[in-house]
Image (tube, one colour):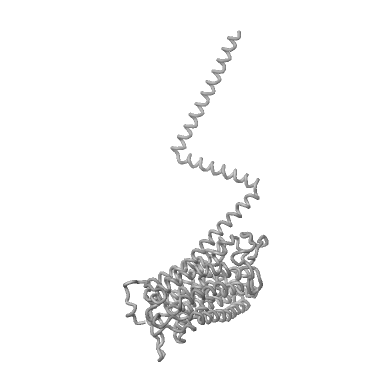
Length: 507
């Protein structure tokens, strides 16, 4: 009996396993048929892909409902990451403008001074970086009083960036509106500081000692520039008075322009530039190809300069970029036409400076004015730069590259233009509205106050710096060095070895 039962049990198990194997083979065959259909039919493939997407979305929705707090954290981290990436990219664009200045100034000056100009534009950003890190950033953005920051030197002090607003805890409350790490804030701001310093280089070109320029750049970025910056962007008294300068027509360009003007006056003109009978001797640049390349680099860099000042990813980045481009384009046309009318021929150098003037002028109000206003601001800037170049020559103020006309004259114009053209429909703030928007002079008055106060302060600062340096080192190279070129006298090398006979060059 036991044998019979065992045999029956074995047969039953065998039948069960056989049935299971048959079912498994059937299922595998069905699955294989489905796979074959999917592989042969694009519509089946689309259905599978859509099903997977819907499944993932439904799973994510369930997860989001169960973990809303986690989703908010992830979203916040993503925004900080995107904003930081944008600020770093914008910083790189602005830093690259140093290459533009180097090409522009070298091309506008004579070949015997090319090494000197390249050296100044290269080393100035290194000097600016260290000066701003050690002293300038703290003076400009750290907590203090209405006139100066009093802590935060060497990027030290409490800071919990990228926290913003009331969540921010640290010593840089002036930048608590920007939701990026402190390192990103510093990188962007030091790029601006370097720009202010390199503006001076062109106006004092071909006659200033290299060591004087280095020390002047250090003092400018460590002390003078941060003081003005604190007044405006550091929560200082000018900001409290309603002064508006979105990306630095005054804070960056006029500051550099005032230093350039005082330097050009104190140094005096280049040898042979102005004759005793009142005549003006042209000293043309040696390479307008380099100058044109420099202009294009600066034009591109400005898309980091102005849109990057938002320090966040948003739809206004594109708007600011278009406004910036319109002003540059209109400045190019009016600068070309003005020089054509006055000189009888279109002057490439003035076309270049017309573009740069349009860019400088729109920098203060690029987030506050309409497209048509941007064209108007840029067009007037292109005209102003041409007349300014001619006027400075009549006053015997020698500016080899037109830095004063571009950065100072149009930095002032762009700042005042905010008081005329700022549109409350764009700013969303009734207090930030120009005369043509609401018919009042409130904002225009604040802008003029800023222009005058910054001008007086920078004349005092820059004159003091130049005079002190003159008493220590002497500002100007010897007549022999100036005649032979600063490349030989200051650096002991030539930019174009074997191509030019510098000793035979007239001036």
